[in-house]
Length: 465
Image (tube, rainbow, N blue to C red):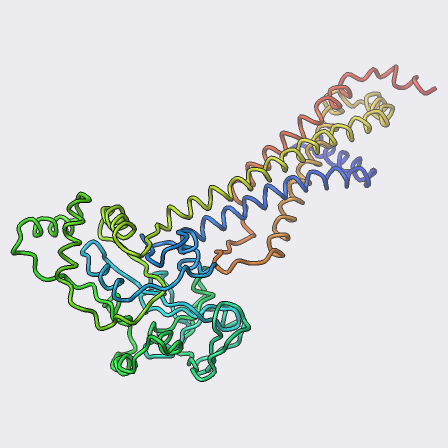
């Protein structure tokens, strides 16, 4: 930018500063529209990253019959009440299916100061690549590993003891006779683990008593303090192969297809499921329950076949996180779209306001513009003077809008499952919004700038004499 352009820019800023009232109103109106769009962009970005992070590695959620979305929200995002409990014996039956690669049981029901206590094996936090800042993973009954936000909010330290409150509110029926001991504190990850207290499933059984046996407590003391390779070790769920199906060539062929990751028909799936039922030994955990189970499959065939089998042939419910969240996103996108339309209407009105502002400036300063022409300023100079004012108003409105959006976002109540991205970064959508804002400012100032360009110097100087 040469000296002349710098001079015009400084002069345009001075002109705007000479009318602080109208300038402020023009910037404010533009900032409101930009802030709404910027806030939507921030919310969508955070929601998308939260979904990708919190749903990573979970193909299917199995739980009690009810709303599939409620099952996903309660078991994956821990943002709703569970649909109920399911028998452990039925969960064991599902995990024996060769289509299942990994199964992680969850037992819910209590909270500590509003933070949920989740009964789950060590595989659950490791599913999200959680790391410990200090201590060790939960291993024995009533061991507890707390998330980073919980440690910061409650001040819990290694070795501290606390008790849970029934339900998911801070007040309610407490269990002071069962004290959890903090054995580990998780590193902040920006995901769901930051707001959870993880304990063995047996802890939940013990606290709620009705479905717990002393032999489980004794079994737990035999484990070491390292993560277990068995996906369901803590909940006594084992993904073992069923009795050898080699005697039946058809069953052998189906099993080979499953282990090779090949697709099988629904009829083949039913046949294999019947074999599993016939070969199943009576469960010694018939009176135990869990809240839900997270599944990973060996191949995409598992998603289709096992989901249909569970929903049609059992009293359980299988829900796909990806499918349910897509439905939820489609509902929220309607609200986002309506807000976007409102924001663009405000921006268009802001553009009209900039036009009115510059048109009034032109009318009031016509003589000043004529004097500039007499003193040697060219037509292009006065044209750029008005054009720069429109660009400055639009750019200032965009900048104020992006800052305002971030302030509003920080003041909004935080959902514990949201992954908070850095607000210092500029999102691609906001950069695009800047381009549209500048175009709006240019279009709004073109007519006043063109009139200034075509100013009749003699008429303007003699008009008021």
